[in-house]
Picture 1 (tube, rainbow, N blue to C red):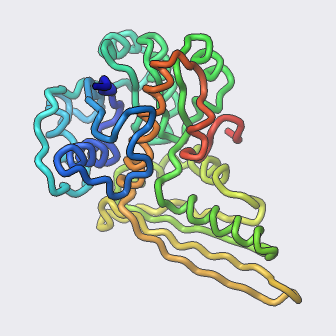
Picture 2 (cartoon, rainbow, N blue to C red):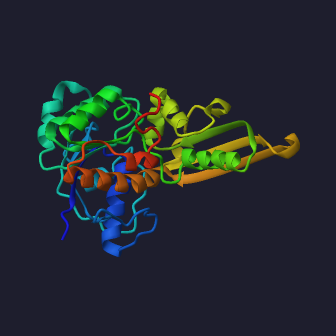
Picture 3 (cartoon, helix red, strand yellow):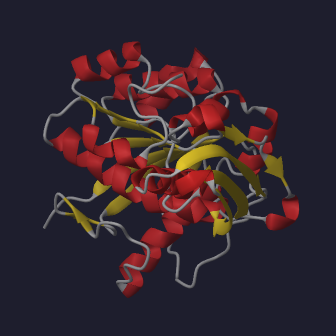
Length: 314
């Protein structure tokens, strides 16, 4: 029987809630709805154990992980499954590099550190990457803060023999994925793009944070799109009543044969944390498999699951 992956999570927000609950649902029902790959290198969706969790919210610190994921401001809904205690107490997370050694010690026994804190905090991202290096665990950066794109970090993880996956999730079925697919379709069919834009609004705490700290996110979203010189991104909007849902509006203006006009408008509504969890479940298993095989550095097979893999702009 294959050994389960031992995962630590930095950030106990909606994305972690969706991941923890979804794994429990899969174990109890065998459901593979919304699963891209049922098995990766022998590891199934249910072959994940959480062994450590870090958060900065005082209300969540000290709580069991399965209790903390339902605490405000989290608003991802409860899934229809029993959720046994994880017996993992949420501990105080990092805000800078001063407590790297403490966190590294708390990672003892983990194989993968999933960094799922809000984007726009590059110092915190680097501090967790440092802790992962010191602890000898693989690092998955789900945020738009540059870690895997930074040649220095890529080299450090390569030399250490530790997998590094990042940066920024390409949500399982999110705005960037749909937008890029449509732009590629235009090109494949010989149409000429005139202009395009996307507007995103959501109600999660991550959206609220990104409204205030959008500096790295815009570039990351542009990295995920082709023909970026003709694509405009509106500033992200936070609407509390949307809760864990995201609403996106896409517009594409193009020309066909004889310079005739083509106009396309799309509305997309999804639970944003579900889209993240559907990708994280693959990234975690890829990272664990590479770690067990002794493969360090960035993993090419993870690139399609990311907005800003190595080689894209910072």
